[in-house]
Length: 441
Image 1: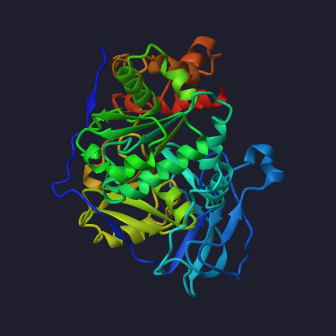
Image 2: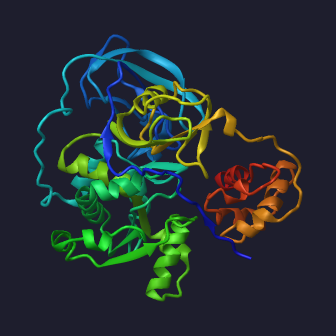
């Protein structure tokens, strides 16, 4: 029996707008900010850098041709390089980071920026501008590639589509939903630019049933997209999962009454979100690299909830202070959603380009996470949207036995929603083990 998870909102006073955060005195800029790549610093201790200056990039000698399009890392502030140090990353890993002491005048912050007329730019010129700005695609809450790398994946496909999700993949996060309301014009322009870069045949916009998107989509937006067919999908965003690739393509096929498989649509489509579209707009229209991110900060031990615009490299501790500090003893820090996010231990962890939400939970609300043996209760199977048997795949992998090809093929279907792990009474890391099997393939 298929189960649908409803995730109720708990905020009595929901956040409705973006607030600019304070500038910290020092920042730690992680050298890994997308999947599969670690950048090399091109600055040294004692150097002075400008706001927006490239300070790290992926080495072609190390990664070869697959590094083509990997995102560069820019300094979010003017300042002095204090050195390269170890730090905790928001994805739970450890790595190197560039420490910068704020000093000097800004190039973009507080300046009156003029909009650039990009209409006559070719798709290749637009893509180069976006890539040089270090834009990454944050569509998935647990997978991050540079914008250019994701575009290149569908370069040779026919009948290409652009799917844009205007709400959050994880209902415990509100970043994309708030941005859709506050920066709608920016997002629409970003969608137009992306459609041109990808040379798509159709734009598919998925929006929350609770929003009034069709009212916001006024005459000026209609004129912008007049030459590109558009399809609007009204999604019940409070149900989980509802915003993954399979869910969106399934909704598209249902609306169009097509018999194609979601796999065929996914292969030839570019999937993105509101956050990425804002960064595309900033890169092309305002010529600003990705140096700030919008982070939804919440949790039951914080004084206040907010969507903060903060510099990349700002520590979680600084962000918590800007929300009034802790009212209870901190128990856990969860990055990018309570359902399928990553738990980190250090308040010194810095924000990266892929951080969209940080949840601070109190110590008293921590639950027992100790792992026990599989009870064969079948809950993981009943909640799996793709009809997998997570318990059997898990048992095969951890036993060290040779995994049958049938199980490997089925693991590829996993959309990493994390419902199997969330519903397992034995607290087994089912989703993570299935992902390991997928990565090996």
